[in-house]
Amino acid sequence: MDVPAALDEDAFRAFFERHHAELARFAWMLIGERTAAEDIAADAMLAVWRQWDQARRARSQIAYARGIVANLAKARIRAAVRERRRNTLFWQKPTETADGPDTAAVIDVRAALDRLPLRRRACVVLRHSLGLSERETADALGVSVGTVKSQTSKGLADLRRLLGPAPDGPAWAQVTKGVA
Amino acid sequence: MSDPADRLRVHAEEFEPDSDRMWTRVAEGMRAPRGAATAPERARWRVPHLAMATGAAVVLIGGVVLFGLTQGAGPSADPDPAPPAAGPGAQTSESEASQDDTSEESSPDGPSGSGSSAEGGTETEETPEQPDWLWSEGAIDANNTDYFTQSTVKFRSDTALTGLEVELRLAEGDGLAYLDSWTTDDNLFTEAVYTSEDGYAVLRWTLKDGAVVPAGNEYTLAGQFDPNGGPRSGDADSFTVTATGEDGETGVLEGGF
Image (cartoon, rainbow over all chains, first blue to last red; front, side, top):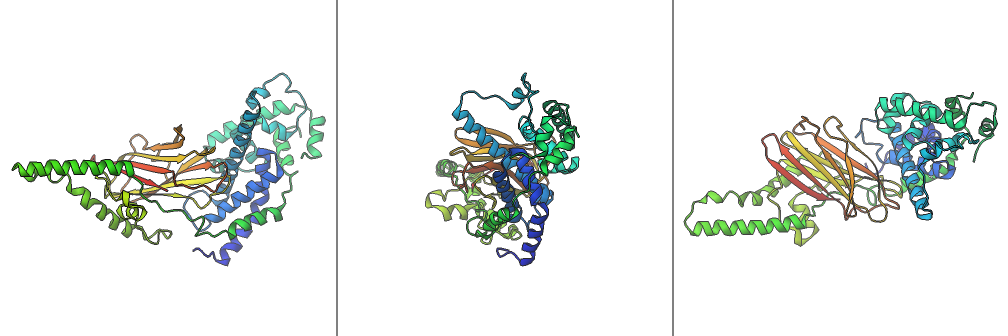
């Protein structure tokens, strides 16, 4: 068991090929940094490998991996928040910012996501960026389907408000040309 | 296309992750020795305070009994000090027999007397509370990285349990952050309550109202943390399982990681 069979490695490699892009995108949509997102997704993959031969949980491997990505992203965001708190006394909750008077300002999807509470962000990303079902999203995040429904609809409403109505406006243009 | 849902989908596809870079990172991790550095550390018993208090209590009781005997009183007080001596041995063999199915414990001296004697001479005292019908073990998960660590507590009871508290204590050190928790049966256990107490991150699970833990099953309860730089050592961590059987008997097991 300590020496993993080649078969296991092959199966895991296939799992990696199938899911790494999804996991990296999920991480990126959560935290907004590409390199860090790749690292987080890779670490989640490694976590899957570590328990590849253990059927110890009811959740599927990919649900487990998505959950780890969400956890690592949360940890990273918290660390960043701690850092920000150290650096400045002023710290506003993202949602308060979103309710401010200048929400009409042009922002892209990524920046808009940053203003959502993390669970809501994770729900809208898994449901709509990655196209998962409500059930799959619930499994990944360890929450109920009802929570997924409510968080996703709130998240979409937030985004609608933040992104404004204009489909051909500057915000949309910025999205299509890509954001670092 | 103004629908945020569509924009979310399109936006995600903007990012083409570098799969070679990712695989390199994964492969490096895979090469790390699985057994040596990252195998879950078996629980060792670290119950100095309880053990010392218990030792003192045993001596005290023994003294009282001796006094009673010399005074001509019957052996009615005798059963009290006797079980502590017999209990741990019985528990050890029970553990060895029942741990055979878990591959990682090749030398399952288990969470009882032999574990503590292996660790240090000062901890050979056993507590009378340690029940032979209850087994538990703590481990740090193999997935122990800079960003993520998971501590698990397993337990099993030979009698059905009507009361239970599982407490997991992790030294916070330099910025340990609680992430998440899970159990292998959310129908039985409450969601873990997280608190930060005197430099320790503490997770507590209890039994849901009216729930009864069936005898003989093994359950796992786990806490996930951001270690703020790892991999993490569990040396300063501990756990406590307090269980009440159907017959009303309460047993306490303490352990480390």
